[in-house]
Length: 248
Image (cartoon, rainbow, N blue to C red; front, side, top):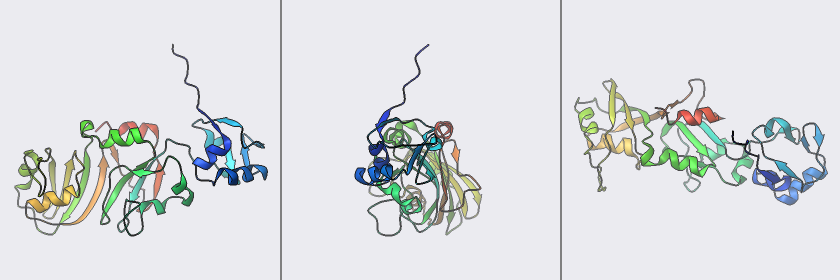
């Protein structure tokens, strides 16, 4: 039997600074003021090394509040309409829906793929680079499921076109991988894709002469958007839920 893995150790001031609580000098000031408590005991040494365990947010408080989750952190968000997924795009971003200090976390948070400003639904945000690349890698074949509302009725032939695996989007040199279309009504359809090309779903329907009026992502892999998660709300993803992503 292999020995259990030891928890990584971190200096208290570096740990809290990396979680966005301030510079190391500001964190040291919090410690001096008795604002950092572990297992009911006030910590007095900002340079002390602390085991970074999964249960640390249940054991440590900062200014009377539970410690923010250490890295690696993955968030499931119900992205609302009207917000962008990039730090560089103009307009309100999904990061503004998270606690303000999380913008100073190190490593930083990034969305796993993007939903455009006019697309809502399931969005994952993480600071775990290996997990991010595993989800978006074409080799993982993680399906993404969208519900599209169209401007014109379906003709009936879209499913065969999308499933053929030879649809070429304008300006590209490689055909799309096969995708599955499920009609939900004259102007509604559920589309399952395994790629993440730029505005892919909208461009696919444009290629068959239609236009997407509304788009909502319902599922990634085996993980569905919870029915009780309102637009703009989010929660931390468990390890079990992360594993479910790869079980479609």
